[in-house]
Length: 220
Ligand code: C5P
Image (cartoon, rainbow, N blue to C red; front, top):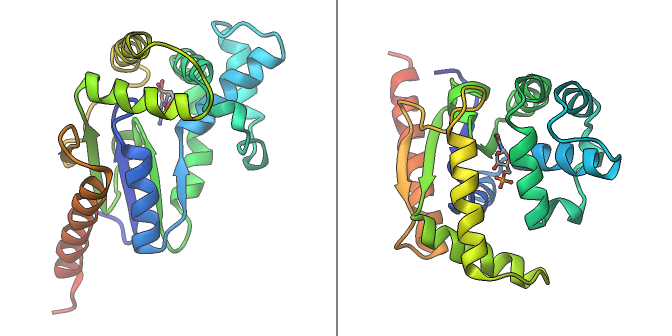
């Protein structure tokens, strides 16, 4: 385990990991990177440029061009953006191109919180604390439906549930981006929790990891 205070928050779509990551950032005074935003940006920027999401070299080139100032775009929060993100995320070239960006964020001197799919396994395997946040597909669909509806999108809950199943299959069923918990991640199932309870549980997991780390590193 490295000396920097990096918290990895992984999990499937709409599991609550984004809200948990934001809460941990506040609780521990750390910057937060929603890494899904990077994949969403690549997908949406390709579509805006009229490019084919299945075009591997074009997707990798778009990922290499990505800079922090491009990420703050409300167009990246839509249902279509999530779908586009999950399609470009299958390209190993895209994942490679986004690796340095994510690792630079994780390597900030004070530490950082990153949420995504492969933070604990690929981006920051030495993270001080790793959480794998899950919830049933039905609960995740409900949450995503509420979020999208609040943003003004109109669709049936059943369609969002289909999206969730499709995203799970695509995100989990490939070699380039295995969606699985790191062996040393703590599993947090938020199906029956309010967001406050989930945030609280996450904070306690990180506090315990920090206490263990301080115990190991205490001068004898
Ligand atoms: O978390 P979010 O819904 O914003 O992620 C959008 C998509 O981006 C995911 O379905 C996944 O395909 C991809 N992604 C990824 N690795 C990450 C973050 C997101 O493959 N670290």
